[in-house]
Length: 308
Length: 114
Image (tube, rainbow over the protein chains, first blue to last red):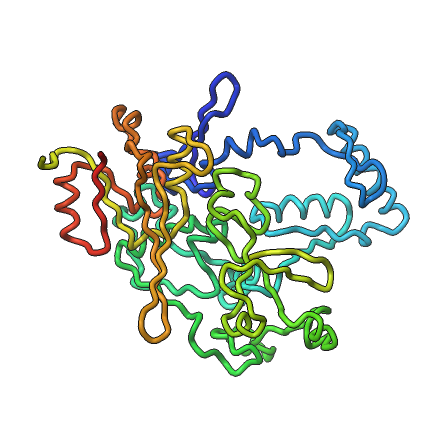
């Protein structure tokens, strides 16, 4: 939760989650996902026990095992890998969760592996942004929305910013990134102007998207612009794929009630965004004769999927 | 019959609605509505405007199921949608007072319950 919540419990059962009006961060507000918490907690499809595969990989057959059994199994298997191949042979991968970094690092270091990987670098998500401001300023900074003052915007020490620059980022829809996303709306109501940089012409780089570069790196005689390594599946590295797979789809669009495949099993949320959505440039849609609202199949080099 | 302006209504400042659906889920939880029913519905309005541009706006709209949280307001609490609205763009109050507030800001809708 990006703020305080009040969980109402009756006879040991969670019956309701509401925003805490006394919490200075959200002041009683709470997002749709938190408000639907009972539907996560008591979801019939929620896993409450570890499952162990029985049969072969593609059969989809699983048996419930105890937590002790699961931990023992992991320890035995991982221990064997470490014995045979060394701890560096294991890479600890993490997803987007803002809170997972420290824990997965501890796990990796306890195992003896220095390899911790974040799988989403290169797109406009949290880690590249953090890396960008760290390179520019020497530290990671976030928006000052009076979040450290108990009276928030009313504290005399706080000055509402005249402008807030935003790029590559839809703040209210991407709440988990650093701040309570809707604070940006609070600022707008108090007179802050939003400066969006997304449409400005950039520097003369390949993408034309670089607006700001590291003067610190330049002073040190290093290339001030980030390097780009071509991924293995692109029209550049594999031009022959273009014929069969002419479109490149990027993921990461967020809806307030859905993120990737998350939250889809929650009835109160699913109703608002029931189907996966593919957004295509109008010119590309015209080229492939796709009309708005139509269902499309998308086939990719790895596996098929569907959206509308 | 003239509407009693001392009655309560909802002032909806749709300029700041981001279409997050929090009001709908808050309503469903507070009033035990299953998915698909709620006293609040967020409408998405897309309007073509000149120069090949489009104008997008969200309007939280109280439906026939809105009561507006009489069981909460009697206890001095805000209606569930108002309390939880992430943009704080919903306000519950006396219609006469809300109408005065409306004079000071554009892009607002005043809603009166049955």
